[in-house]
Length: 180
Image (spheres, helix red, strand yellow):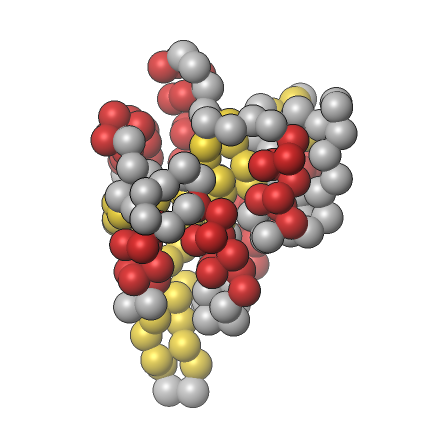
């Protein structure tokens, strides 16, 4: 089965003319990352999904879909890149000699005001305190250059926002299913 959700190991994606969809096995990469972190106790019991999206209609739709089947995660909305970085800097808790993340997953738009989403992605993945947080890029851009750049900087998944409401809901539902 082919999923319209692009996953690859960070820094290992080489865009080609046919690199539009990856197989079911590729979808497992993000799921395995989250599952491994759960088993190792990386996440706190009260974790959050950070949604970084400046379009209020898209944000409302994403939150509605994520909360449809009680995901047991608070969805925190940040409307620009600067807000997201500031929030991330405040979401770690020191538990003795170990720092744990309150962020379970980041869903990141790229076309953001103040600080571009690609810069937010770089901040997350180049900072040892945040680099292990899975990041799914959700953006209107579907060109191979942007896709390749997102994976180069460490995105764990990439979703091009579809044009239809139904397709948009389907793609967010896939993310929700990975989280549950």
